[in-house]
Amino acid sequence: MQTLAIVGASLAGLSAARAARAQGFGGRLVIIGDEQHRPYDRPPLSKDFLLGAITAEDLFLETPDDGLDAEWILGVSAVGLDAAGRTITLSDGRSLAADGIVIATGARSRKLPALEGLDNVSYLRTIADAEGLAPKLVAGNRMVIIGAGFIGAEAASVAASRGMDVTMVDYARVPFAPQLGEDMGATVAKLHTARKVDLICGAEIESFAIEDGHATALRLADGRNLPADVVLVGIGAQPNVEWLEGSGVELRNGVLCDAMGRTTAPGIVAVGDCANWFELTLGEHRRVEHWTGALERPAVAVQALLDADADAPEQPVKPPYFWSEQHGVKIQFAGHSAGYDRLVIEAGDPEEHNFLAVYYRGETPVAVLGMDQPRLFTKWRRSLSAAATKPAPLLATAS
Image (cartoon, rainbow, N blue to C red):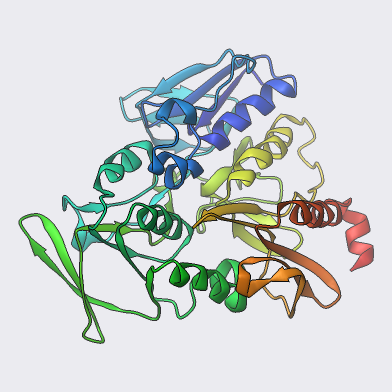
């Protein structure tokens, strides 16, 4: 392999570049990114950056020790791919042929078409998004957040700490249930209501009041009217894979991959938020949108890409992990809660928002949730990781 192209100047793309050099790749390394910025850290955008505790310079991820010796093509997006010829077409008209390709184009915020172009409506995914939202967080103003996911919840926490009147609206009956299950989702929801955030679940938005380029209110199907000075939309993310349509790479809720990130096209792998990996422990595909996945999984995918043995066996990866900071409480979660049938509180009290809960499927722990329990959580996370990354034959024997 003489040329390796990484499409996506993200954490996942940077991690893939680091892994390639660490694994001995000495050829031409090209990194393509549609933003003018080099890779930066996104989780702090809805936390410390929005609070003003850190600056944009603190977000950038490269270090002097990286030694990537890479060619950077920034402010240019990939618009097409010929998978058979491993040739990437760029938005500026150029094309780039490579021996191996890493797709790391990430995801973008899902939009509400009815609110497009309005001055007081924000999303929160990029540095530009956060820089646009931060000045709007003014004490006494009314903020309505559409979507009670973790991005919206973190922004609600910041806005409440700034003295704003915050309402968070979600279609789901229980927020955070897809990640935490209904019981623990309800527990995290209580953290917000205890901090005077008005949380409206099971809600349907009927219409928006729009005046002079601003969304001034939301009307719910039950007749409630929610006045707004600032609106934040946090209704999930959409993988950036349209440029791959017709390329020869199979798409299904992102880029379809095996358990090592290999796509259906030889010589091409996918990592990060756009990659729909097969999860050996679940027996199904999952698109994992977490920081640690973007940090750790690219090394596995690059190994599969650089390995001359195309039939290298699939190996389990560490369980997904994410953390959140809401109203001064650190929330940590590792594993997959899907299909759990038992929940055990190992320490603390959920009512105090200081506890550790373990999710079981039968007698097997499959996930762990901690609120302000970092030391005990770390022990349980290590235990889950050790069990999940046993060699595949041992897992098969155990099951």
